[in-house]
Image (tube, rainbow, N blue to C red; front, side, top):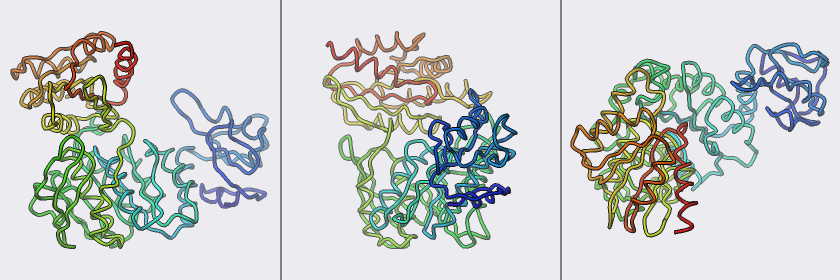
Length: 454
């Protein structure tokens, strides 16, 4: 891009021009041919590092205030650095006339993104967000990775409040939109599921007239969504009104699920290398997206088998004859119930153990939601519940009141890890689930480290 293009994208201008090969938010990466965008965070203010970025050779700095000692001609002043970064990403995205898929939802959006990437990659060289790069910084940084080789892109968009999805979708401008679910994640900030729906539907504002919008029809709020401007397509397993449905769902062992997809494109057998009915829903969204973007239905169904999980999403690790399932990337009441159902159906020669910590951002009803989840867990074929974290005491209380015989709350992670070392036996399946902020993976790492001496 040219520096003048970048300045124009944020509603400003420059007195000189220069080629720009990359946009950076880390002053240490600033050098000739870069533009530094200052981001204000909770711990650090990028504006404090703008002078150093310019000294390191950056062509210009996008900042929120005047920078003492810096050449004013090289400072582009904007009201908000994050929004400026998104606008620059949107300007760069405008150079690419390829299909873009926008994915959001309370739960399942990362898995759905990965399934869509697997399907689209059967025909197109496809860009996707890596890891959890789905926020106001990660999305534009993903857009900056576009190259002339790319033939499609799938962009996951997260949010914590109103306006965030709107900013991202106006930059991405999706050709196809997907909303996976409306749950209670972020209800602490938004107040109700209806408000969460409103925030997620901001995705539509960046989509052109007539674009397809895939919604999970098994979700009560999404099933009721209508649009005069877009083509709504429902997918699901329970709702008979869904145009794309999974039937004859069968779990095979501990690592695959087969089903038949019934859709406007006919019936197609499919298999995914993961278990859990919630993952079947995510696969349906990917199948529909692929068909809508010109992939042959049989090829789209077959491509679902090339899905691979990322991070700590149902990652299965053998450990001294037992199976550890690392599923603690994130957690909400919906995803916890899905995990409990999947664990209850997991092939097991020993006992099924569910290890939990707190679910965050649930607002004033957090305790009640934890107790409700505990009662739900007690009704499943799960032998042992172990938990730590202040809110997880409510989960254990709910399970205990519902009649679960073996459930225990621990004062801290170290004591729970020690108890796990003595509880796990060959043949057991141990499933870890918690919100990312609880760092439950620390217990897993302790288990692995101490297990080396067993």
